[in-house]
Amino acid sequence: IAIVGKYTGLLDSYLSVIKALEHGAINSKRKLEILWVESSDLNDDNHENWKFIKEADGILVPGGFGQRGTLGKIKAIKYARENRVPYLGVCLGMQLAVIEF
Image (cartoon, rainbow, N blue to C red; front, side, top):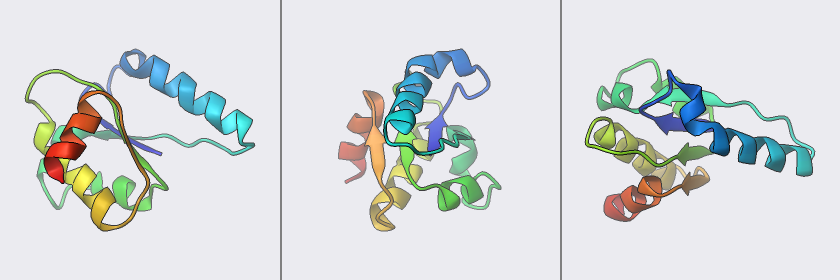
């Protein structure tokens, strides 16, 4: 699962999301691999972090505040929609999905 956020250097910011994914993986007897993607890196269409988006089995955009990284999140959401990649938006992530559509 690719988590596209702007606090990827401070993983405690997404602790509840991580725990939810871990419990979901345990319940479904699946191995969880989280691919951390800094949303502002996705502003550049050629950034190396796009490889994580393209190899992920799903994309999750968690909540966040402020404008920084918003364009990258919208680009990740658009990629998920156009390529039929499962997507989950939490709080701001769902609002941006509505805006992107």
